Length: 513
Image (cartoon, rainbow, N blue to C red; front, side, top):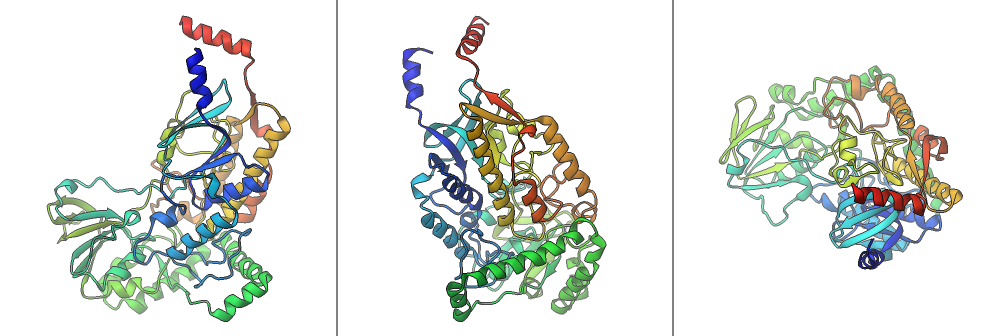
């Protein structure tokens, strides 16, 4: 290294921890780091504000399908939720509140999308290239989340469409749908919220449904002033409410993971829900799934089915096959003339784009390492990527409860990871052993075999291109919390920086080569 190179190297700012993303995972990591006494960290956010998926998804009707008091941090209870199921604007405001309460703003770096992260084996740190400059970090916490990068299908002929096209997670609020002929592509959690909101405004709504979802009633209500006041005056009542919500869902897990046949009663209730709202036998048949309830995420809505029964709505029981100008053609040959297309087609979950930007110890990207399927030790650490951790990593998703519970478990793991580095002392890194990762993944996949997500007879976004469920956790949140309570050093290789002489010999050999 020349003197000029040395000067340039020294000008690159260094932090102990770089957190990627400022949604629930990233902000939670920031709070936990501060609680562990770590203040030398930054939170790199590609947008200009915090919020993650609750900032990006602002479509009409956007709300959470997990009760408010469970979909919030245990260390930041919120007594003033206005509804039992909160809307996007309230959840985003909560995340802003958490940011201010825990004084995280000095650590935030907005408009700093990560372009590339490279492990430096000599310096034992990550070089992180962002849209606003480069920095180095001893530890990287990737909290980009699985619902951050929209997935838009490559539909033949889409370039010929003359109208408006956008994804539900990139809603164009400047485009007025009133009086328009609109196509909604997809029937996931976003679509069933969007359809009832836009149906009264549009001239014609055509829903392209590849697979119908199971939809249950949404028991939502406003939380009154007296009730909120009680939670403020007696904080333990909020904890009790949260505990009850958690306990009910914990008891439900066995039906999803071990005894899917027990979901038969729930399925009968869902069928009655369809029958109450849909009187047309033909439409009812098109809207009734042919797979076990729970195989795909059970959706909640009181307004979805009534909206589909309105005269200006047409349900096409087939996926979109091609586009010819303003004409959308389904796989069954039916067609519709539309002015606008809204894709509610989900996200890159099993092929997260950030993986292409993470380059490990041997020069291999995380995407290459995961080409056969995503795996990570306890949902956090991938072999060959020292001092790199994921929040909401492989097989940490839930089918019936709050992801905040899983995030907080991973924050426990992060905290102990930092403690272990401190105890080991000096310039040190922890790299997950391949054998430990494989053993963990074998246990997860063995448990997955009996779950409704694998046996329910559906194809869902939980499954990767190889048909393997790399998304969902096949157990209770309690089990996951116990599994991530401590870092077991036997599952990691302790990596220390090479001695200067050894590094010099290697550099000379590389130069000679």
